[in-house]
Length: 101
Image (cartoon, rainbow, N blue to C red; front, top):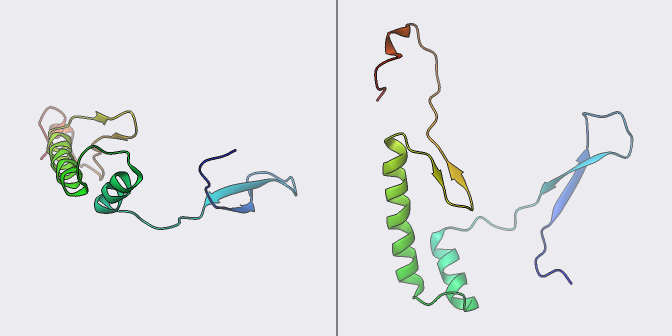
């Protein structure tokens, strides 16, 4: 029996001509922040620290991750990946060998 449930809405798949071909989009229950997740972990019994301590540690970790991303590092946590991305247009190749900031 499934332990987790995700609500989804089906939409016509416009990439095919099949009449019964659909794509699914998740219907989000609620957007959770760090505090919500820390409270859930301690309430459920999956944490050996307080919700406040967990929230503090996660915020420190995320700040350090952001700092390293700003230096050009990519991050792979095993749960998600983050990497800096440069957008825009450039009118000269002179920036090729310089660090953009």
